Image (tube, rainbow, N blue to C red; front, side, top):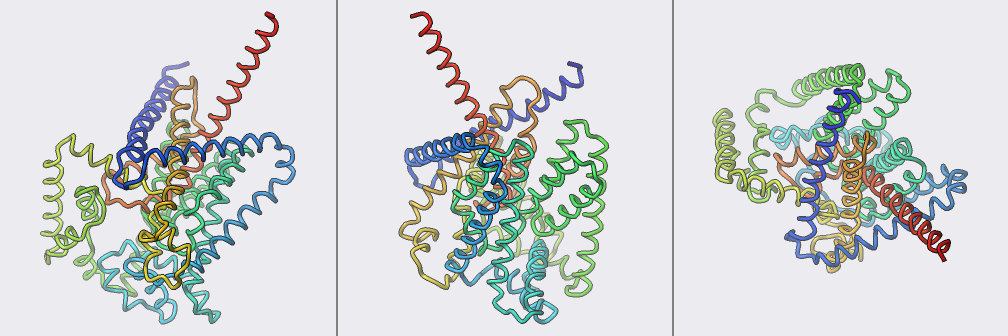
Length: 504
């Protein structure tokens, strides 16, 4: 092995080691040191049961692999139809009247579709322009519905989000099939269909779920480009980055992961083409996007004075456990002068970092990641409890104040943390195995990127939603590793039995 290959291998191993160390601390803290009040024993028992069931199903899949190969398309289509249908049903049952940020982008999109502008929502978007992309994305289906005389906009947005969600699941299946194989693509569908919060994506059509399709789409297009070498896939990667980042900036983590993956695999030409075209399209689209809104709907100078600086969310991420707190908003809005505001926020960031010190900052990072990765319900009740239209048995499970919410959370956490554990196993396997093990690198780079981003940003249990599909993909490597280990152990036992029989 040449020096270059050794350095390449070492850099990958360092990444896997870093991922293993950090995420072991995070997952261990989530299970044993969280403030949710849930019993670690019940969570661990649920995880053991969940992983055991997955291994049994995995064994069943391999046993009947010929049947599955023959009916693969029908199996996948049936799973996707079930997923879509249940999402629509749950969307109707859990229908609500949005408030706060979701109300702003939803009501703004409705008004824009009906009147050609969103005057009543202008005050909100002057302060939070980063949500203009989410409103624009919702505007498209709502405008089409309005043209055809459909005015049940909640249903339209819900169906639109359900279509995005089922597309996400389909892309996850395709990625697993391409990276690992047919059995694993079946198993990732099984995992998703067993994860209850994914059945409630349709009605929570905020930017977290609206953007969920784009990271996996970017990764899928990259894999297609690697295999087919067709330029159109690079253009599509760039366009996917543009649309995704306008909805939620974290989508670009997938692009960064691709760039790193190209570097590691010495695909310099691909790196230059993908990064060059994507960045060019992002710059051009951002100019067009801002030019359109600040020419046709908003006052650019007014926006400069009212926009909340991005540093505000960094400041808020340094207080308490990094979650939303109204006092920081009061602080930010207490300044009339923009330069004074930015300077005051920068000083407060500096003060909070200095007051915590190195150990305090490390403790904060762990606390923040517990928030990000520690809620198996994906904090969907943040939306579902906004003026529910119905009052059903399901509400008693999925809403924070519901009588059965604790048991719902145990079930969701058990599945969610099992997926994270399998993801972690895939990283340990890659770290300990000799030779190049880059197969699981892409999804793990995405997760690591999201994890790093939230170390410096405001956090919530729902903010990781658009990267949960990457966890499912990475988890399939871990599940495959466990099944391989089980087969090897069984083979060793059989050899030992044969050896003992021969001795007798």
